[in-house]
View 1 (spheres, one colour):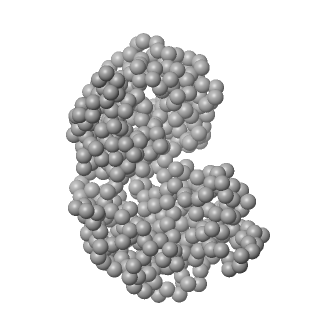
View 2 (cartoon, one colour):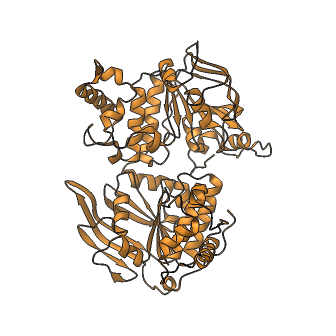
View 3 (cartoon, one colour):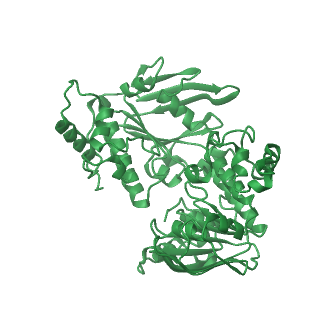
Length: 531
């Protein structure tokens, strides 16, 4: 990717004098559940309007109504001043509305040019002019600053490249309203900066952008206005310049949050996990030595590609160590598979919650007991009532919001899915819990609840090794911080001496990075920076 070129503007955008999109008193119910209650929202040309709220607040339902995937029970929708009586996905596209989601909806085995051509129409003749389509794709990609060969297969593209292809597709359809739903969830800091630059360019060229994200720093960096949804209702629409992070969080959750990072000191016990010069040649992890004591949270920071996740996979036996030694509670163990890791008292909640953390089609009860089937089985068969009873204990303990333990996990919010993933591994009664990005993609309320659960667990004597790309989370929840670079440890900082600048200096290998004057506590409460 290259720096973004100036974005061209569509003539039908700049001629709109009023709002591009007006939703008034939108109401939607699913059976007895009221998803939206008289929600109103306005998007102007040349504006980025953020839509924020906890998981389950109604954001996804509202977007589905705007894009025609769902129909409102009542309320009105106007696009560029014209009332739309009933909208479906094809009508939404014809009205100039395009959505770009966290996971790009591209055909992986087709080329970039073919994907863009599918979105921009058949071209008016039966004979396809592929040279013209390739030129058109190249023009659209250039408008978003993407140096991507239109002939490349989508499956060869990185995630940020796929996001740029999605934006190019939207521009190719002359979309006036672009909806971006968690577009940066899988991107690095540099890639996020590039995408936000593209968003600003779209705004400046007269497009209207609805921007949905749980990351406060992005909202404050790019949005002109913010609308807050809570429990299906729109509670406020404010200029970004007039609201603080603390005020926004309070509006989202309906209460003051004393701290998103409820870390309390715990007297640490004996070493629960010791890694002695472990390594794995295939993953690049080498010479890693560290310890985690009972009652302690050790955070692992580092840039993407530093070896953080690879280290967790080695400790859990997904990519077994080929050098060094793993010691659990003072006893050397051979971890050559996940089953031997579980037997040794090691549990692992992976980064990709939806792909590896939970089975979306299975019930809450089945997910909760999946790693501890022996506890709910008799004579080789699962006792469904015992399974439900165990699940109910964790649902109550972790305050999982679900209609019942028989509900499919895929119907729950991201934060509640993460709680179910935690419950699955805690049902194995582990000594050590490995958490990889434990709050990725969850709202601030769920994040605070997960952090509270972590605090409770270490107070009960569990040892936690936490990987996070969010420096405020690392600083706010860790007793000690391990910084990795190029597959090994470059430094270990105590909580009292840690700061964003010191962590970044170790992560970058840059001795020229110096501490900011703020204290470690101040760093933990800043808007956020990802490592």
